[in-house]
Image (cartoon, rainbow over the protein chains, first blue to last red):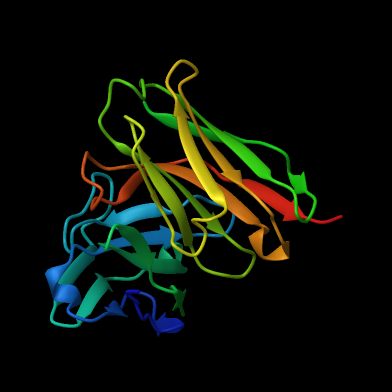
Length: 106
Length: 122
């Protein structure tokens, strides 16, 4: 089965840029989606199909995908961005999630 | 505006069957060619996919749960149902229903319910 690997945690200073990776075998050939998950809330889609921002998502959120790594980038990180972030792909007729990265804004 | 609302028993006994319903409002399931999914998040753990159902009834399941899971659609009631049999403590989680962004199974989930907590205990 396909596996996605995310770092457990990433820290970023307020106002700086956070980058979170999602590793998978030839993930660059797949569509990668990213969700923001805060405690007690439903996940929110922040990036779809590698680099597309749904309406209502700030331009500070961006994504890229190439080779074996997809990346979610949050520029000018704010306190409200502190959350868990999950990458997701569709592979072999199944939905696959990464283990999630906890973003801490210092 | 599309809204999803999960409901069902908050407590299930080990070895019994968990049954949840996702009520859909703001749109008709039968009139929209989207995928509807069930997902869960165990306490302190990450998101876990249970399965998808197409509006016409075709299903995809997580291989690790496939033998215990049934997802169905009731267009007359405009809801999606989940049945998970032979539950154990490992099935305790917040359960979410969700709908894809568009008509492709490769698309992400854009609409989500608020989730419902299920505890497994005797």
